[in-house]
Image (tube, rainbow, N blue to C red; front, side, top):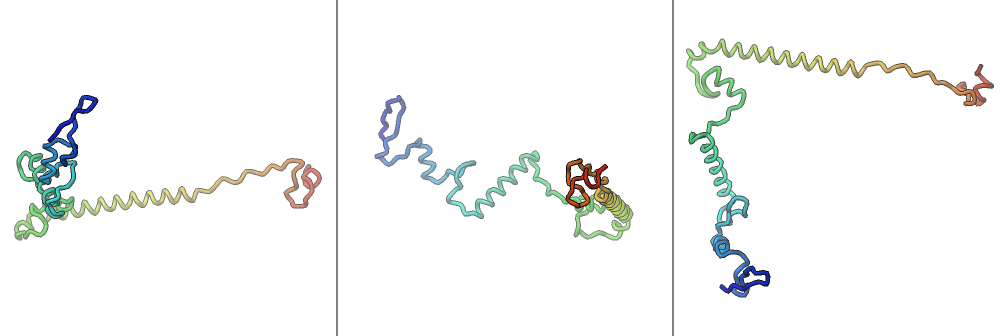
Length: 168
């Protein structure tokens, strides 16, 4: 490789040797196809599925590091969390009759509380709806009386001036 000196004191690589205007290390990495670093172009030697699997694996490894080396626990939906709290098992896992008899009062209390919460929610919705309806049906103030000037046309429709027709 020939290096030439620029007028401003910097160096440039001569293009007649077929070398790009980047450092030799960067050119080697580009030639090897290993330029799939974060923020760079995607690796050309991986298919879309392989890239997606690699990304999933990176996310799993990040969650493990973030969790202090323990594998991340799957997130539960709110209903599954309640179910686990009350029954001690996830939905779909079989319960013994003893477990069912022991925990059924907790489940009944949970259902009754959710019914009360729904009723309070419905009552609040009803109250807001009534308030909106009441605000919508508020009577408008009566129109202000129209004050007619003396030289204005008479409101009775005669076409004469108000002072000559209905005026004082």
